[in-house]
Length: 471
Image (cartoon, rainbow, N blue to C red; front, side):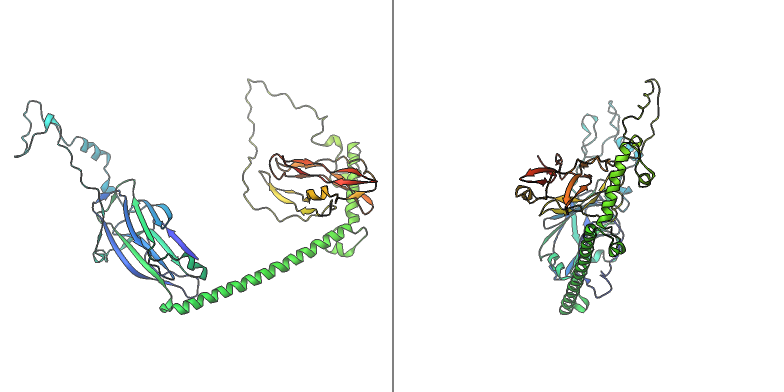
């Protein structure tokens, strides 16, 4: 689809417009008008008005110079749409004074001597009153005048100043065709005078026509293109549906594996961990966390990244930092990496295992990548519980209160806006399962996290799931 307004400053020749490798429209000149500025040196503004041809397959309009180039500002207005740009070309030294020339011009008129011995004015003239030079006459503002095209027909094109090009290469392009009679206004002006002594403007308007001028054949070509696009769209939709179905099947299998509490060869072949393996990992993390708090981490825990409590960077017993140097000393602090906008796209999403569903109508919100200012960091997914589930008591229940909350070691905050969401106990399949805490980004500024708690409900306890509170 082509619907362009060009405002350029490049040397171009008149050519045929080609689209793709198949049949294409070509520009057939309908009108050509020549214009000349009335002064050799001028700045404008100069305005040219014309109207759209209304060709059914689009049109091309160019404003170019012949003989010499120009530099300045160009504004093209088509109906209510306006485009602005600058062009640069040509040599305007003839219209600019050098420093020495400006100095000479300032002393060109010499006042007559006060004793009257100066040169005699020409016959019929009047001596300048008070010894001042005569008043300067001001000529009329330069205008842009139209002249016969044959006067510039043999001059080479120097540069393209502006172009409007619209052509119908798809059926939907017909909406871009300019209605016949649409006003087109081109305005040109410059910050410094241009040398128009050998420069002319030529406005050319061409209709876009099909090969051999066969309108019916071009319409059939457009219909064929549309049918091909529709076929490709159907194929793309079918492929997208197929991929979605495969993704859904894989997700279902991942969820199934997370609930299997026994070895499962199929889960292993597909790269998923079973629920028993996930629980074993969670139990091991719980054991190692307890050892770390007692400064008794064993080698098995160290192998998976656990350290004693006093080895953590945030341990309070670390020695205080050395005092700052005296004020009289000057120190050079090396500059660290500076935060910057993302310089590359995020990686592919990570595969997540969903935690137990907290309520009947809860929706899983998958994790996402967040830019930290230095790199992409992953924020895990979580459940969004409708307020109606809480009000209608459609959340999980348990026969008794959960165990005491586990002590969690928080990983480093991934981004400045992230908020820590505490872990909690969930009751599933007749046993308590610990749902680990995570970092999450509030949905809006000022939102706070309401933690998950179990509340009495008759002879049972009911989960009041955590959620964002927006004030």
